[in-house]
Image: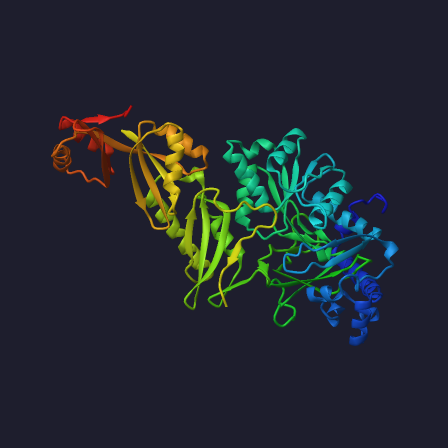
Length: 436
Length: 138
Protein backbone atom coordinates (compact mmCIF):
# COMPACT_ATOMS: atom_id res chain seq x y z
CA UNK A 1 0.00 0.00 0.00
CA UNK A 2 1.45 3.37 -0.93
CA UNK A 3 1.43 6.16 1.59
CA UNK A 4 -1.06 8.06 -0.54
CA UNK A 5 -3.56 5.20 -0.41
CA UNK A 6 -3.09 4.71 3.29
CA UNK A 7 -6.17 6.70 4.22
CA UNK A 8 -6.37 5.41 7.79
CA UNK A 9 -2.63 5.39 8.51
CA UNK A 10 -2.16 1.61 8.58
CA UNK A 11 1.59 2.20 8.52
CA UNK A 12 1.16 3.74 11.98
CA UNK A 13 -1.59 1.41 13.18
CA UNK A 14 0.55 -1.72 13.03
CA UNK A 15 3.88 -0.29 14.25
CA UNK A 16 5.96 -2.40 16.65
CA UNK A 17 7.01 -0.95 20.02
CA UNK A 18 10.49 -0.25 18.61
CA UNK A 19 9.03 1.56 15.61
CA UNK A 20 6.75 3.59 17.88
CA UNK A 21 9.68 4.57 20.11
CA UNK A 22 11.81 5.62 17.13
CA UNK A 23 8.92 7.55 15.57
CA UNK A 24 8.05 9.25 18.87
CA UNK A 25 11.59 10.55 19.43
CA UNK A 26 11.69 12.13 15.96
CA UNK A 27 8.14 13.40 16.07
CA UNK A 28 8.60 14.89 19.53
CA UNK A 29 11.69 16.79 18.40
CA UNK A 30 9.69 18.15 15.43
CA UNK A 31 6.76 19.04 17.67
CA UNK A 32 8.95 20.94 20.16
CA UNK A 33 10.63 22.81 17.28
CA UNK A 34 7.22 23.67 15.86
CA UNK A 35 5.83 24.76 19.26
CA UNK A 36 8.82 27.09 19.68
CA UNK A 37 7.44 29.14 16.77
CA UNK A 38 4.52 30.26 18.94
CA UNK A 39 4.68 33.30 21.23
CA UNK A 40 3.72 31.22 24.25
CA UNK A 41 6.17 28.34 23.92
CA UNK A 42 9.08 30.44 22.64
CA UNK A 43 8.92 32.49 25.86
CA UNK A 44 8.42 29.35 27.93
CA UNK A 45 11.33 27.38 26.41
CA UNK A 46 13.61 30.44 26.68
CA UNK A 47 12.80 30.74 30.37
CA UNK A 48 13.55 27.07 30.96
CA UNK A 49 16.60 27.15 28.69
CA UNK A 50 15.49 24.12 26.70
CA UNK A 51 14.64 23.28 23.13
CA UNK A 52 14.32 20.51 20.51
CA UNK A 53 18.03 19.68 20.83
CA UNK A 54 17.29 18.34 24.36
CA UNK A 55 15.18 15.52 22.92
CA UNK A 56 17.06 12.25 22.35
CA UNK A 57 14.28 9.83 23.24
CA UNK A 58 10.59 10.35 24.03
CA UNK A 59 11.43 10.10 27.76
CA UNK A 60 13.19 13.46 27.49
CA UNK A 61 9.72 15.03 27.51
CA UNK A 62 10.01 15.21 31.31
CA UNK A 63 12.55 18.06 30.91
CA UNK A 64 9.74 20.27 29.61
CA UNK A 65 7.13 22.25 31.55
CA UNK A 66 3.46 21.23 31.70
CA UNK A 67 0.75 23.10 29.83
CA UNK A 68 -2.51 23.63 31.71
CA UNK A 69 -6.00 24.72 30.78
CA UNK A 70 -5.16 28.01 32.49
CA UNK A 71 -2.20 28.46 30.10
CA UNK A 72 -4.58 27.98 27.18
CA UNK A 73 -6.78 30.71 28.62
CA UNK A 74 -3.83 33.04 29.23
CA UNK A 75 -2.66 32.57 25.65
CA UNK A 76 -6.22 32.97 24.29
CA UNK A 77 -7.05 33.51 21.50
CA UNK A 78 -3.98 32.55 19.48
CA UNK A 79 -0.80 32.78 21.60
CA UNK A 80 0.06 29.13 20.90
CA UNK A 81 -0.47 29.27 17.14
CA UNK A 82 2.70 28.56 15.13
CA UNK A 83 1.69 29.39 11.55
CA UNK A 84 0.32 32.33 9.57
CA UNK A 85 -3.40 32.91 9.53
CA UNK A 86 -3.63 31.94 5.86
CA UNK A 87 -2.41 28.43 6.64
CA UNK A 88 -5.21 27.86 9.16
CA UNK A 89 -8.38 26.27 7.86
CA UNK A 90 -10.38 25.58 11.03
CA UNK A 91 -10.71 26.35 14.70
CA UNK A 92 -12.73 24.73 17.47
CA UNK A 93 -13.44 25.74 21.01
CA UNK A 94 -13.83 23.32 23.91
CA UNK A 95 -17.34 22.53 25.14
CA UNK A 96 -16.69 24.75 28.16
CA UNK A 97 -17.54 21.95 30.63
CA UNK A 98 -15.34 23.62 33.22
CA UNK A 99 -15.51 27.35 32.48
CA UNK A 100 -14.19 29.68 29.75
CA UNK A 101 -13.73 27.89 26.43
CA UNK A 102 -10.31 27.43 24.90
CA UNK A 103 -9.51 27.68 21.19
CA UNK A 104 -7.64 25.10 19.11
CA UNK A 105 -6.51 25.82 15.54
CA UNK A 106 -5.84 23.49 12.61
CA UNK A 107 -4.01 23.58 9.30
CA UNK A 108 -5.17 21.47 6.35
CA UNK A 109 -2.55 18.91 7.32
CA UNK A 110 -3.94 18.79 10.88
CA UNK A 111 -7.52 18.26 9.76
CA UNK A 112 -6.27 15.55 7.43
CA UNK A 113 -4.37 13.81 10.23
CA UNK A 114 -7.39 14.06 12.55
CA UNK A 115 -9.63 12.44 9.93
CA UNK A 116 -7.05 9.66 9.52
CA UNK A 117 -6.87 9.00 13.27
CA UNK A 118 -10.65 9.02 13.57
CA UNK A 119 -11.12 6.71 10.58
CA UNK A 120 -8.54 4.36 12.10
CA UNK A 121 -10.60 4.28 15.31
CA UNK A 122 -13.83 3.44 13.51
CA UNK A 123 -12.14 0.73 11.43
CA UNK A 124 -10.60 -0.72 14.58
CA UNK A 125 -14.12 -1.11 16.00
CA UNK A 126 -15.08 -3.09 12.90
CA UNK A 127 -16.73 -0.40 10.78
CA UNK A 128 -16.19 -0.41 7.00
CA UNK A 129 -17.30 1.58 3.97
CA UNK A 130 -20.37 -0.68 3.80
CA UNK A 131 -21.71 0.85 7.03
CA UNK A 132 -24.26 3.65 7.30
CA UNK A 133 -23.42 6.04 10.10
CA UNK A 134 -25.72 8.41 11.97
CA UNK A 135 -23.89 11.11 13.91
CA UNK A 136 -26.10 12.22 16.82
CA UNK A 137 -23.41 14.51 18.12
CA UNK A 138 -23.67 18.29 18.04
CA UNK A 139 -21.93 19.92 15.09
CA UNK A 140 -20.60 23.47 15.31
CA UNK A 141 -17.88 24.27 17.80
CA UNK A 142 -18.20 20.92 19.56
CA UNK A 143 -15.56 18.60 18.12
CA UNK A 144 -17.66 15.42 18.42
CA UNK A 145 -19.71 16.39 15.38
CA UNK A 146 -17.19 17.29 12.70
CA UNK A 147 -14.50 15.00 14.18
CA UNK A 148 -16.54 11.82 13.77
CA UNK A 149 -18.02 13.12 10.53
CA UNK A 150 -14.67 13.57 8.80
CA UNK A 151 -13.38 10.24 10.11
CA UNK A 152 -16.45 8.34 8.96
CA UNK A 153 -16.29 9.94 5.51
CA UNK A 154 -12.59 9.15 5.31
CA UNK A 155 -13.43 5.51 5.96
CA UNK A 156 -16.10 5.73 3.28
CA UNK A 157 -19.17 5.20 5.41
CA UNK A 158 -22.36 6.93 4.33
CA UNK A 159 -22.85 9.66 6.92
CA UNK A 160 -26.15 11.07 8.20
CA UNK A 161 -25.21 14.32 9.98
CA UNK A 162 -28.32 14.16 12.19
CA UNK A 163 -26.99 16.18 15.10
CA UNK A 164 -28.46 15.82 18.60
CA UNK A 165 -32.06 15.83 19.80
CA UNK A 166 -35.40 15.31 18.04
CA UNK A 167 -35.63 11.70 19.14
CA UNK A 168 -38.55 10.75 16.91
CA UNK A 169 -36.64 11.90 13.84
CA UNK A 170 -33.48 10.07 14.95
CA UNK A 171 -35.45 6.83 15.15
CA UNK A 172 -37.08 7.42 11.77
CA UNK A 173 -33.73 8.15 10.08
CA UNK A 174 -32.18 4.97 11.50
CA UNK A 175 -35.10 2.92 10.18
CA UNK A 176 -35.52 4.58 6.79
CA UNK A 177 -31.84 4.55 5.81
CA UNK A 178 -30.82 1.24 7.44
CA UNK A 179 -28.29 2.91 9.70
CA UNK A 180 -25.81 0.40 11.16
CA UNK A 181 -23.63 2.61 13.39
CA UNK A 182 -24.40 5.57 15.62
CA UNK A 183 -22.37 8.08 17.58
CA UNK A 184 -24.04 9.49 20.69
CA UNK A 185 -23.46 10.33 24.31
CA UNK A 186 -24.34 7.31 26.47
CA UNK A 187 -27.09 9.27 28.22
CA UNK A 188 -28.69 10.18 24.92
CA UNK A 189 -28.50 6.59 23.66
CA UNK A 190 -30.26 5.60 26.89
CA UNK A 191 -32.86 8.31 26.39
CA UNK A 192 -33.68 7.05 22.88
CA UNK A 193 -34.03 3.46 24.15
CA UNK A 194 -36.26 4.50 27.04
CA UNK A 195 -38.40 6.56 24.73
CA UNK A 196 -38.85 3.60 22.38
CA UNK A 197 -39.70 1.24 25.23
CA UNK A 198 -42.22 3.74 26.56
CA UNK A 199 -43.93 3.70 23.20
CA UNK A 200 -43.98 -0.09 23.15
CA UNK A 201 -41.19 -0.21 20.57
CA UNK A 202 -38.10 -2.45 20.80
CA UNK A 203 -34.72 -0.73 20.28
CA UNK A 204 -33.42 -4.07 18.92
CA UNK A 205 -35.77 -3.68 15.96
CA UNK A 206 -33.55 -0.82 14.71
CA UNK A 207 -30.94 -3.38 13.66
CA UNK A 208 -27.96 -1.27 14.82
CA UNK A 209 -24.62 -3.12 14.81
CA UNK A 210 -22.39 -0.78 16.76
CA UNK A 211 -22.43 2.44 18.72
CA UNK A 212 -19.56 4.80 19.42
CA UNK A 213 -20.05 6.32 22.84
CA UNK A 214 -18.20 9.17 24.48
CA UNK A 215 -18.13 12.84 25.51
CA UNK A 216 -19.28 12.19 29.08
CA UNK A 217 -18.30 9.85 31.89
CA UNK A 218 -20.29 6.64 32.14
CA UNK A 219 -19.83 3.18 33.56
CA UNK A 220 -19.32 -0.32 32.27
CA UNK A 221 -22.74 -1.25 33.68
CA UNK A 222 -24.34 1.42 31.52
CA UNK A 223 -22.55 0.00 28.49
CA UNK A 224 -23.91 -3.49 29.22
CA UNK A 225 -27.38 -2.07 29.71
CA UNK A 226 -27.24 -0.27 26.36
CA UNK A 227 -25.84 -3.35 24.57
CA UNK A 228 -28.67 -5.43 26.07
CA UNK A 229 -31.35 -2.95 25.08
CA UNK A 230 -30.17 -2.43 21.50
CA UNK A 231 -28.36 -5.66 20.73
CA UNK A 232 -25.40 -3.66 19.37
CA UNK A 233 -21.79 -3.54 20.47
CA UNK A 234 -20.88 -0.30 22.20
CA UNK A 235 -17.35 1.04 21.82
CA UNK A 236 -15.79 3.54 24.16
CA UNK A 237 -14.14 6.59 22.73
CA UNK A 238 -11.82 9.04 24.40
CA UNK A 239 -10.93 12.46 23.20
CA UNK A 240 -10.77 16.08 24.24
CA UNK A 241 -10.91 19.24 22.20
CA UNK A 242 -7.35 20.23 23.23
CA UNK A 243 -6.13 17.01 21.54
CA UNK A 244 -8.37 17.68 18.46
CA UNK A 245 -11.45 16.00 19.91
CA UNK A 246 -12.52 12.40 19.29
CA UNK A 247 -9.96 10.09 17.70
CA UNK A 248 -7.38 10.14 20.49
CA UNK A 249 -8.11 6.67 21.90
CA UNK A 250 -10.69 4.08 20.96
CA UNK A 251 -11.62 0.50 21.71
CA UNK A 252 -10.83 -2.35 19.39
CA UNK A 253 -13.21 -5.29 19.09
CA UNK A 254 -11.86 -6.75 22.32
CA UNK A 255 -13.75 -3.92 24.09
CA UNK A 256 -11.19 -3.89 26.85
CA UNK A 257 -9.44 -0.52 27.12
CA UNK A 258 -8.88 2.15 24.49
CA UNK A 259 -5.81 2.06 22.24
CA UNK A 260 -4.26 5.51 22.27
CA UNK A 261 -2.61 6.42 18.95
CA UNK A 262 0.96 6.79 20.09
CA UNK A 263 2.13 8.01 16.69
CA UNK A 264 0.07 11.15 17.31
CA UNK A 265 0.08 11.46 21.09
CA UNK A 266 2.81 11.00 23.66
CA UNK A 267 1.21 9.75 26.87
CA UNK A 268 2.30 10.22 30.48
CA UNK A 269 0.44 9.40 33.68
CA UNK A 270 1.39 11.61 36.63
CA UNK A 271 0.39 12.02 40.24
CA UNK A 272 -1.86 15.14 40.14
CA UNK A 273 -0.41 16.42 43.44
CA UNK A 274 3.34 15.87 42.91
CA UNK A 275 3.31 15.81 39.07
CA UNK A 276 5.78 12.92 39.24
CA UNK A 277 5.14 9.88 37.02
CA UNK A 278 3.13 7.17 38.78
CA UNK A 279 4.41 3.58 38.85
CA UNK A 280 3.41 1.68 35.72
CA UNK A 281 -0.25 0.64 35.68
CA UNK A 282 -1.32 2.95 38.51
CA UNK A 283 -4.06 5.56 38.27
CA UNK A 284 -3.04 9.16 37.77
CA UNK A 285 -3.70 12.20 35.64
CA UNK A 286 -3.33 11.72 31.91
CA UNK A 287 -0.81 14.12 30.34
CA UNK A 288 -0.51 14.30 26.56
CA UNK A 289 1.80 15.86 23.99
CA UNK A 290 0.71 16.21 20.38
CA UNK A 291 3.19 14.61 17.96
CA UNK A 292 1.56 15.33 14.61
CA UNK A 293 -0.23 18.68 14.96
CA UNK A 294 1.38 21.66 13.26
CA UNK A 295 -0.87 24.71 13.80
CA UNK A 296 -0.93 24.41 17.56
CA UNK A 297 1.20 21.72 19.20
CA UNK A 298 0.56 21.22 22.90
CA UNK A 299 3.39 20.06 25.13
CA UNK A 300 2.64 18.03 28.26
CA UNK A 301 -0.99 19.08 28.41
CA UNK A 302 -2.65 18.19 31.71
CA UNK A 303 -5.99 16.67 30.70
CA UNK A 304 -7.40 16.47 34.26
CA UNK A 305 -8.69 13.02 33.34
CA UNK A 306 -7.75 10.23 35.70
CA UNK A 307 -6.89 6.85 34.19
CA UNK A 308 -4.18 4.22 34.00
CA UNK A 309 -2.26 2.56 31.21
CA UNK A 310 -2.96 -1.09 30.43
CA UNK A 311 0.45 -2.30 29.41
CA UNK A 312 -0.36 -5.94 28.58
CA UNK A 313 -0.40 -6.94 24.92
CA UNK A 314 -3.84 -6.74 23.35
CA UNK A 315 -5.07 -9.89 21.57
CA UNK A 316 -5.94 -7.69 18.57
CA UNK A 317 -2.22 -7.36 17.84
CA UNK A 318 -1.95 -3.57 17.90
CA UNK A 319 0.99 -2.35 19.95
CA UNK A 320 -0.40 1.07 20.79
CA UNK A 321 -0.99 0.90 24.54
CA UNK A 322 -4.47 1.06 26.01
CA UNK A 323 -6.01 3.56 28.39
CA UNK A 324 -8.35 2.11 30.99
CA UNK A 325 -11.79 3.63 31.41
CA UNK A 326 -11.53 7.12 32.91
CA UNK A 327 -12.26 6.99 36.63
CA UNK A 328 -13.21 10.63 36.76
CA UNK A 329 -11.99 14.14 36.20
CA UNK A 330 -10.20 15.99 38.91
CA UNK A 331 -12.81 18.71 38.15
CA UNK A 332 -15.74 16.31 38.65
CA UNK A 333 -14.52 15.17 41.99
CA UNK A 334 -16.94 15.97 44.80
CA UNK A 335 -15.72 16.35 48.33
CA UNK A 336 -18.46 15.15 50.66
CA UNK A 337 -17.73 14.93 54.38
CA UNK A 338 -14.06 15.15 53.47
CA UNK A 339 -14.32 12.06 51.25
CA UNK A 340 -13.46 12.21 47.53
CA UNK A 341 -16.46 10.99 45.54
CA UNK A 342 -16.71 10.62 41.77
CA UNK A 343 -20.18 10.59 40.18
CA UNK A 344 -19.01 7.57 38.17
CA UNK A 345 -18.79 5.55 41.40
CA UNK A 346 -22.45 6.28 42.14
CA UNK A 347 -23.47 5.47 38.58
CA UNK A 348 -21.67 2.14 38.72
CA UNK A 349 -23.83 1.06 41.67
CA UNK A 350 -27.05 2.38 40.14
CA UNK A 351 -26.49 0.48 36.90
CA UNK A 352 -26.34 -2.82 38.78
CA UNK A 353 -30.04 -2.46 39.56
CA UNK A 354 -32.58 -3.41 36.95
CA UNK A 355 -35.48 -1.99 38.97
CA UNK A 356 -34.30 1.57 38.45
CA UNK A 357 -33.77 3.41 35.18
CA UNK A 358 -30.56 4.94 33.85
CA UNK A 359 -31.18 8.52 34.99
CA UNK A 360 -30.00 9.74 38.35
CA UNK A 361 -29.22 12.96 40.19
CA UNK A 362 -26.80 13.48 43.09
CA UNK A 363 -28.03 16.23 45.37
CA UNK A 364 -25.73 17.70 48.01
CA UNK A 365 -27.15 19.65 50.94
CA UNK A 366 -26.12 20.57 54.45
CA UNK A 367 -27.81 19.49 57.63
CA UNK A 368 -26.25 21.70 60.28
CA UNK A 369 -22.53 21.40 59.69
CA UNK A 370 -22.77 17.97 58.07
CA UNK A 371 -22.88 17.32 54.33
CA UNK A 372 -25.83 15.22 53.18
CA UNK A 373 -25.84 13.32 49.94
CA UNK A 374 -29.12 12.27 48.36
CA UNK A 375 -29.17 10.05 45.32
CA UNK A 376 -32.38 10.35 43.31
CA UNK A 377 -33.26 7.48 41.02
CA UNK A 378 -36.29 6.59 38.92
CA UNK A 379 -38.31 3.44 39.35
CA UNK A 380 -38.21 1.46 36.09
CA UNK A 381 -41.84 1.22 35.03
CA UNK A 382 -41.80 -2.39 33.90
CA UNK A 383 -40.05 -3.71 37.01
CA UNK A 384 -42.64 -2.61 39.60
CA UNK A 385 -44.41 -5.60 41.15
CA UNK A 386 -46.81 -3.65 43.37
CA UNK A 387 -45.17 -4.72 46.60
CA UNK A 388 -44.02 -2.24 49.21
CA UNK A 389 -41.72 -4.88 50.73
CA UNK A 390 -39.88 -5.45 47.45
CA UNK A 391 -39.26 -1.73 47.10
CA UNK A 392 -38.12 -1.43 50.68
CA UNK A 393 -35.61 -4.29 50.25
CA UNK A 394 -34.27 -3.03 46.94
CA UNK A 395 -33.84 0.47 48.31
CA UNK A 396 -32.02 -0.84 51.38
CA UNK A 397 -29.76 -2.93 49.14
CA UNK A 398 -28.96 0.09 46.97
CA UNK A 399 -28.23 2.18 50.05
CA UNK A 400 -25.93 -0.51 51.44
CA UNK A 401 -23.98 -0.80 48.17
CA UNK A 402 -23.60 2.97 47.95
CA UNK A 403 -22.24 2.98 51.48
CA UNK A 404 -19.72 0.30 50.55
CA UNK A 405 -18.67 2.27 47.51
CA UNK A 406 -18.26 5.75 49.03
CA UNK A 407 -17.78 5.05 52.72
CA UNK A 408 -20.71 6.99 54.15
CA UNK A 409 -24.49 6.76 54.05
CA UNK A 410 -26.35 8.48 51.25
CA UNK A 411 -30.12 8.93 51.24
CA UNK A 412 -31.87 7.22 48.37
CA UNK A 413 -35.03 8.72 46.90
CA UNK A 414 -37.06 6.64 44.50
CA UNK A 415 -38.94 8.83 42.05
CA UNK A 416 -41.70 8.05 39.56
CA UNK A 417 -40.67 6.98 36.04
CA UNK A 418 -39.73 9.93 33.83
CA UNK A 419 -39.55 12.48 36.65
CA UNK A 420 -35.84 13.25 36.32
CA UNK A 421 -34.92 15.55 33.44
CA UNK A 422 -34.04 13.51 30.35
CA UNK A 423 -30.48 14.17 29.41
CA UNK A 424 -29.67 15.13 25.86
CA UNK A 425 -25.96 15.86 25.53
CA UNK A 426 -23.81 16.18 28.60
CA UNK A 427 -25.96 15.14 31.52
CA UNK A 428 -26.24 17.37 34.58
CA UNK A 429 -25.93 14.81 37.34
CA UNK A 430 -24.86 16.83 40.35
CA UNK A 431 -26.80 19.54 42.16
CA UNK A 432 -24.74 21.09 44.92
CA UNK A 433 -26.93 23.15 47.26
CA UNK A 434 -24.38 23.41 50.06
CA UNK A 435 -23.79 26.97 51.29
CA UNK A 436 -20.25 27.65 52.39
CA UNK B 1 -59.38 -14.19 43.49
CA UNK B 2 -59.34 -10.64 42.27
CA UNK B 3 -56.85 -8.06 41.02
CA UNK B 4 -56.07 -5.02 43.05
CA UNK B 5 -54.30 -2.14 41.27
CA UNK B 6 -51.00 -1.06 42.89
CA UNK B 7 -49.68 2.35 41.89
CA UNK B 8 -46.24 3.71 42.76
CA UNK B 9 -46.37 7.37 43.84
CA UNK B 10 -43.89 9.84 45.27
CA UNK B 11 -45.09 11.32 48.52
CA UNK B 12 -45.84 14.78 47.17
CA UNK B 13 -48.94 16.98 46.94
CA UNK B 14 -51.01 16.39 43.81
CA UNK B 15 -50.10 12.74 43.32
CA UNK B 16 -53.48 11.34 44.35
CA UNK B 17 -55.37 13.89 42.29
CA UNK B 18 -53.38 12.94 39.17
CA UNK B 19 -54.22 9.25 39.57
CA UNK B 20 -57.85 10.05 40.43
CA UNK B 21 -58.14 12.35 37.43
CA UNK B 22 -56.68 9.85 34.98
CA UNK B 23 -59.06 7.13 36.16
CA UNK B 24 -62.00 9.56 36.34
CA UNK B 25 -61.44 10.76 32.77
CA UNK B 26 -61.39 7.14 31.64
CA UNK B 27 -64.72 6.55 33.42
CA UNK B 28 -63.21 4.13 35.92
CA UNK B 29 -64.84 4.17 39.36
CA UNK B 30 -62.61 3.84 42.42
CA UNK B 31 -64.49 1.66 44.93
CA UNK B 32 -61.85 1.77 47.65
CA UNK B 33 -58.35 3.08 48.06
CA UNK B 34 -55.59 2.49 50.55
CA UNK B 35 -52.12 4.06 50.80
CA UNK B 36 -49.13 2.04 51.95
CA UNK B 37 -46.89 4.92 53.04
CA UNK B 38 -43.12 4.46 53.04
CA UNK B 39 -42.17 8.05 53.78
CA UNK B 40 -40.59 9.42 50.63
CA UNK B 41 -42.86 7.33 48.43
CA UNK B 42 -45.86 5.08 48.78
CA UNK B 43 -48.07 2.63 46.94
CA UNK B 44 -51.76 3.26 46.31
CA UNK B 45 -53.88 0.12 46.46
CA UNK B 46 -56.97 0.68 44.37
CA UNK B 47 -60.10 -1.47 44.22
CA UNK B 48 -62.06 -0.97 41.05
CA UNK B 49 -64.48 -2.93 38.86
CA UNK B 50 -62.03 -2.64 35.93
CA UNK B 51 -58.50 -3.36 37.21
CA UNK B 52 -57.02 -4.33 33.80
CA UNK B 53 -58.27 -1.16 32.14
CA UNK B 54 -57.10 0.96 35.10
CA UNK B 55 -53.64 -0.53 34.73
CA UNK B 56 -53.59 0.29 31.03
CA UNK B 57 -54.75 3.88 31.55
CA UNK B 58 -52.14 4.57 34.24
CA UNK B 59 -49.34 2.77 32.44
CA UNK B 60 -49.99 4.84 29.31
CA UNK B 61 -49.47 7.93 31.45
CA UNK B 62 -45.96 6.59 32.30
CA UNK B 63 -46.97 5.59 35.83
CA UNK B 64 -45.50 2.46 37.45
CA UNK B 65 -48.48 0.18 38.06
CA UNK B 66 -48.99 -3.51 38.80
CA UNK B 67 -51.88 -5.89 39.47
CA UNK B 68 -51.79 -7.92 42.68
CA UNK B 69 -53.98 -10.85 43.74
CA UNK B 70 -56.36 -10.30 46.65
CA UNK B 71 -59.42 -12.09 48.04
CA UNK B 72 -62.61 -10.06 47.76
CA UNK B 73 -65.30 -11.41 50.09
CA UNK B 74 -68.86 -10.20 50.19
CA UNK B 75 -70.31 -9.49 53.63
CA UNK B 76 -73.65 -8.02 54.75
CA UNK B 77 -73.52 -4.23 55.35
CA UNK B 78 -74.88 -4.13 58.89
CA UNK B 79 -73.48 -3.97 62.42
CA UNK B 80 -71.64 -7.23 63.09
CA UNK B 81 -71.46 -8.03 59.40
CA UNK B 82 -67.73 -8.68 59.60
CA UNK B 83 -67.96 -11.10 62.53
CA UNK B 84 -68.80 -14.16 60.45
CA UNK B 85 -65.77 -13.68 58.18
CA UNK B 86 -63.41 -12.85 61.03
CA UNK B 87 -64.50 -15.97 62.93
CA UNK B 88 -64.10 -18.15 59.85
CA UNK B 89 -60.51 -16.93 59.32
CA UNK B 90 -59.73 -17.29 63.02
CA UNK B 91 -61.07 -20.85 63.11
CA UNK B 92 -59.00 -21.78 60.08
CA UNK B 93 -55.92 -20.30 61.79
CA UNK B 94 -55.23 -17.93 58.91
CA UNK B 95 -53.23 -14.75 59.20
CA UNK B 96 -54.24 -11.68 57.29
CA UNK B 97 -51.41 -9.32 56.33
CA UNK B 98 -53.57 -6.43 55.23
CA UNK B 99 -57.27 -5.76 54.75
CA UNK B 100 -59.78 -3.03 54.06
CA UNK B 101 -63.47 -2.85 53.27
CA UNK B 102 -66.00 -0.87 51.32
CA UNK B 103 -69.74 -0.63 50.90
CA UNK B 104 -71.18 -1.76 47.60
CA UNK B 105 -74.85 -1.11 48.42
CA UNK B 106 -75.62 0.85 51.61
CA UNK B 107 -77.42 -1.27 54.22
CA UNK B 108 -77.17 -4.37 52.05
CA UNK B 109 -73.81 -5.45 50.64
CA UNK B 110 -70.22 -4.64 51.48
CA UNK B 111 -66.98 -6.27 50.42
CA UNK B 112 -63.91 -6.99 52.43
CA UNK B 113 -60.55 -7.08 50.66
CA UNK B 114 -58.13 -9.48 52.32
CA UNK B 115 -54.43 -10.08 51.63
CA UNK B 116 -52.27 -12.81 53.06
CA UNK B 117 -49.78 -15.51 52.22
CA UNK B 118 -52.41 -18.07 51.42
CA UNK B 119 -55.22 -16.47 49.46
CA UNK B 120 -56.72 -19.79 48.38
CA UNK B 121 -57.08 -20.95 51.99
CA UNK B 122 -58.61 -17.60 52.94
CA UNK B 123 -61.15 -17.88 50.13
CA UNK B 124 -62.12 -21.45 50.92
CA UNK B 125 -62.50 -20.64 54.64
CA UNK B 126 -64.85 -17.81 53.67
CA UNK B 127 -66.84 -20.05 51.33
CA UNK B 128 -67.08 -22.81 53.96
CA UNK B 129 -68.62 -20.21 56.27
CA UNK B 130 -71.29 -19.56 53.63
CA UNK B 131 -69.83 -16.28 52.32
CA UNK B 132 -69.35 -15.43 48.65
CA UNK B 133 -65.92 -14.71 47.18
CA UNK B 134 -66.08 -12.39 44.20
CA UNK B 135 -64.21 -12.54 40.90
CA UNK B 136 -66.01 -9.55 39.45
CA UNK B 137 -67.23 -6.23 40.84
CA UNK B 138 -69.19 -5.17 37.75
